[in-house]
Each structure stands twice: as structure tokens, then as C-alpha cells.
Image (cartoon, rainbow, N blue to C red):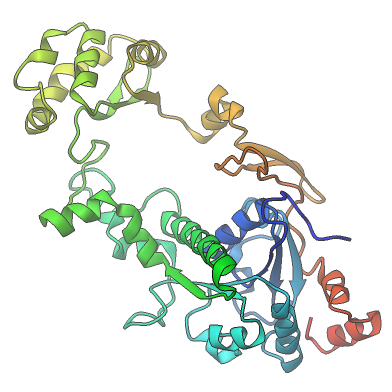
Length: 397
């Protein structure tokens, strides 16, 4: 059986995926969805003390994170398992791992060791806090990074106390940055002919995606506080209650403010000097809200959204998850992709948000069972059925 190839874009690449939980699998999912031969390498049952850390094998998370990958079992703590892994490195392009930084050295799979086997190899490492420094050996999870990276202090209502974001943003961001780093290293390898070690961490990724909030402190020494649903400095930009629910309003520029005032039937507010500039509206934010908030109660959310769209004022609904995927624009974008799983049957998974015109991503195969492709991959290495059986009996695979 040939390797899975969801797209021709990266079908020339082989990736050895040693990751688990979310950040690393997110990185490798991108590569797999765009056609790379991603081999998910897992410890045989009973070897890993944290075996269930990634969730149920046929659960929604595993299905969504590990589609388009092949799976093999391999015990890297055995000499035979390590030797097999190093044989695989010879023909691989990328290795991705998210162990604590010291683990790769103990296993004998650091970048220095891997590049002796294959000078073109790219090692991507994702950690909680970085590959060195005072916290490097600490275990890290998304919520820890959200707190240390400042996100929990700027999320939530004023005075509410620290609030975790509703998705694993540090994990996901670290996975995205790792994928970007791999693609940059692959592009550079086209010129130099050699690979390199790229690494990121949940903490670095979390700080980076705070973006303007972090820059406010670094440049102006302003410590951002919780602002609830309001934008930190643009107004009116936030949540407004309507006759039958809530909508998001996003008024940034002065022209948008004047258009909003016309839609609300209060055009005089658009030229009122107390509100005529971004700075003036920010200084008078409570007054702005007190004047326009009651007006939104006069119509339904759908009515307001239609009027605001016609006027070119940014606004949108606030959905529950079922409403997200029922929206016609979301359906047009094909963000729910059908997939047939041998146990779960017909399911839908989250599509890639990046569209390539000639070589788009696809979901071609469901997430594999643990070790589903072990024999196939070892046969590609030239091992006989007898040799494979012996490795299995010895607990290597």
C-alpha cells in the first residue's frame, strides 16, 4: 500500500511524528493534510506511563488531529527500536517531537545525533517553555502558558479575575509556528542542501500571539487589563444586545462611525466633536455605549446585521457551535469535511483554513488505529515478516 497522499503539495516529504497531545499533532496535521507522508510513531501498549494523555483513540480529538497519517508502534527505549528509528531518519525529511527538552538527549535523538545520520534532516522541537533556561525542564500545558504568557490577565470582564480562553490557543499557536518553521527550513534547504533544528514553545507562541497587547507594554509601558467584550482602544467595538439576542459590532475608523450613526437613526452623533475621532470616542467610551446601546434593542439581530452590512459597517452574529457550522458562508468555505471512519462511521472533521488553488489540502484517510501501519512501514525498510514477528515478540514494536 503506498503512503497516504492527501495533496501533491508536500507529497515528496516524509515526516516522523513523535508528538502527542495537541501542539505537535497540530503541526503534523498541517503537513499531512497537504500531502506529506506523516508517520505517527507511538510506544507499544504498556510502555508509556501517560499512554492515555491524548484522549480516546476513536474520540473526536484524535480523529481530528491525526487524519491522513500512518501509525506505527516503536519502543525507542530499546536498542533495536532506536536503531530502527535511526534507519528511518536516513530517508526522512523532518522529525517532529514535543518531549521535555532533556528527553531527546536521553533517547539519543538530539539534532546533533540525527544530522550525523542525515545532514538534510530538519528537527522540529516543541516544548512548554523553551529548549533551555530556568524553566526548560518543567512540564507545560496550554493553560499554564496562557497564564504565564499574559492571555488570562486580559481575557474576561473587568475585575473578574484570570480567565482561560475557550480554546487551546497556546498549543495551537505553537503547532502553527512549528509548521511555519519547518516550511522555512525546507525552503532554506533548497539552497544550502542541509537541514537545521527549529524549535518553539507554548510560552513563546502565547506571547507572540498577544501581538498588540504585548507591544502596548513593550513600547508604551501600558499594562493591559481585562476589557471584557470591548476592544482595548477602539469603540464602539464589542457586544451589543438586540431585541432577540446579541451581535458583535466592529467600528474602527471615523467613517464607519458616521455610517453606524446613520443606520441607528442618530446621524448627529457622527459629527459630534465628543465622538468624531477614534481618540475622542475612546475617551468617552461609557457615554458612547449609553447613547447607542438602547437603540439596538429596537430590532432583531438579523435586522441589524442586514442594515449594517448594507451600510458597510463591520458586524456579525455570535454563534454557538451548531450555529457556526449551519451558517451558509461557513458551509461555502467547506470547513466541515466529511470522512468515513471504520469505527465511528461517517463523521465530519474541521477543514484546513488555507486554500491553495492547484494543490489544496484534503482529508483522504481517517485517523489510524495505533500501529495500524507498523508491518507496512517496516516492510518498506526491507524487513521480512519473520523479522517483524521477532521484533513484536521482543516488545520492540
